View 1 (cartoon, rainbow, N blue to C red):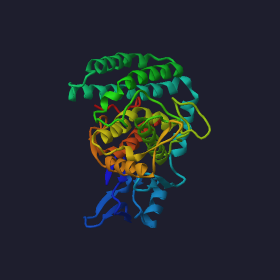
View 2: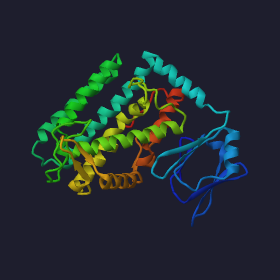
View 3: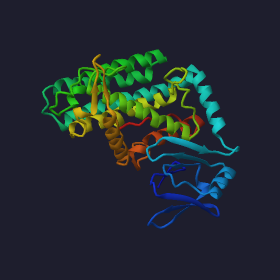
View 4: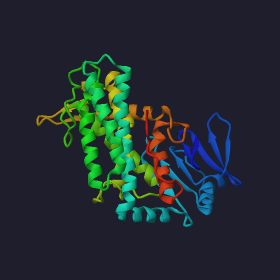
Length: 343
């Protein structure tokens, strides 16, 4: 159980929720019941099949508390929401921002700022922790370049300019990304980012991680009432979760890239996980996807100190916290959206 920003997260699979007067009661096998006043909550998000009592759901509908249900793995199932809630107002404001070039670029800058900042610190940590690598000077050079670019992000006047900065920074970052791989296994070489299809094992892992992270961001945005399909940085396209892709930008490095590199360097990921096709494409096989998802779920339970909230949370809650911060900014509760700046 975790309470953040007036949202109650139920992350233990053996937890059941019920109503007691004006309180939600959190029951977990072998643990003492916890009572929380409903008037302190705006949302309840459950990652458990045990569910909640009909009485509690009815009360939440009555007082305007949204209750969202996910599988323990993070797949969105359903949301219980009554008529008197602010989600429609939140979405209408989201659409107004998306239609205003002057307003949406303020958010787009923050997404790219978070991405470049985090990419830079991944390289900085490599230089700090492994100064013995052969091309340390190249890594330091690219890290310095990313740092120098940061002020220009705040000065970008249009989305095309921002996307140009993002693409340039990604090229510099991935030019030394292979230095992060320290395991001497020939299957895990990295000569550059490629996709559709990925042409090597590392890119296969990155592409799969990014797709899973995008789904996590989509679920997080849907859980608090934002429309994942209407973004500020990525343009509208049928079937594309543009806002989820916006949110994913700042999380790619600290969530996906670090997970892939750790799995390689720790020997968790091996050549047996991949299908190597005749056309050069490389994909995770069934066993590889199963192992990847098992480790991904385990990693989501590990904790970190959130840089904005300054509280310890699970990695799996990071997209949900950022979605809440984004919603609060759209509502006007925050002056500007605080991206996830990891060190």
